[in-house]
Image (cartoon, rainbow, N blue to C red):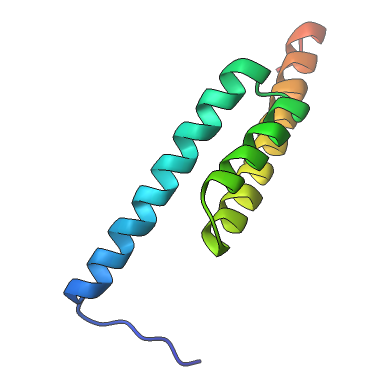
Length: 90
């Protein structure tokens, strides 16, 4: 296994900061859209699609994939938590 771990370079830090900025922009777009559409399955899908389209290229694809994963996990957890609380089980 060949992994490169070493001292950070200025250009590496700069690239990581840009990646962070793209994530923030996509996250804000996702939050705004799901504020209108809701954060359920369909609202999460719409929010992920719009956020992925806002950020162009591979970053947009990754962002849409991660937000899609996040929205389904969140929806399933919310549904299972509400089902267990309505039956009185913990």
